[in-house]
Length: 259
Ligand SMILES: Nc1ncnc2c1ncn2[C@@H]1O[C@H](COP(=O)(O)OP(=O)(O)O)[C@@H](O)[C@H]1O
Ligand SMILES: [Mg+2]
Image 1 (cartoon, helix red, strand yellow):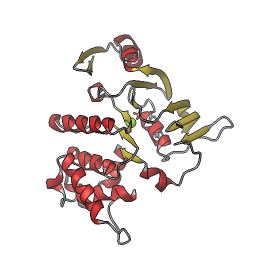
Image 2 (cartoon, protein in one colour; image 1 turned 180 degrees about the vertical axis):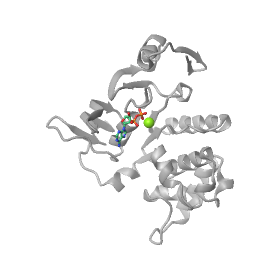
Image 3 (tube, protein in one colour; image 1 turned 135 degrees about the vertical axis):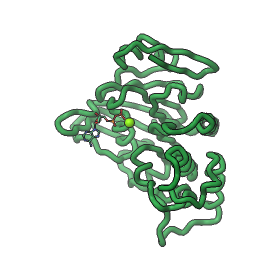
């Protein structure tokens, strides 16, 4: 089977700085990856390259294949991906009610327009998705009236609604309270069991569910470590990457880090 993501030599330059610096990355179908690293490391940029929101510099050795193909229509690609990110949260901060935001995951749109024909089944899926994230009670509330944690959960519901193959979750848990985090972890476990590929960007090591076995560490636009969780998540490596002494604890298959 072709890898889901195969990127070679991607460079993204902003204001003369390579915020993504010659990054190559392959992610096989059905595997789960966490991308970690300090603020500004280039994690979100990498995720945006994967989701086609950003195009790297053209270079002779640059290539990018998603699901084994070089070229995609953005809409067609988005159908295979469930995305949660801060930039999406800004876009969704609108007067659309939560249920319309959730169902709009089927159309890769933000909310509904006159030309969207939503089927009964799609509404049912949206309802289930909102219930799974425990925000069904907010279905008629405008997105811009929700707390950021509530909005995050609606976005997670939107990301799952169309049953995508890959989940791209960039800091999807920031602002979630403890019960919501737990629920979110259970959602991830469910996606894992359903055979989805999960690409998770986080600085909360506690969000790295046991099913995630590969860790990619980024710093200053580069991938500085990539390997099995047990090897990568160690105090020396993390202390080096974050530039401060990091302590690590492991309990019930989950990690916590502090400094
Ligand atoms: N459009 C932009 N213009 C200039 N600098 C940018 C732009 N987008 C991101 N950056 C910078 O690139 C670096 C990497 O950003 P980002 O990928 O968001 O990092 P991370 O998600 O790891 O925190 C940061 O220093 C950020 O300020
Ligand atoms: Mg980021």
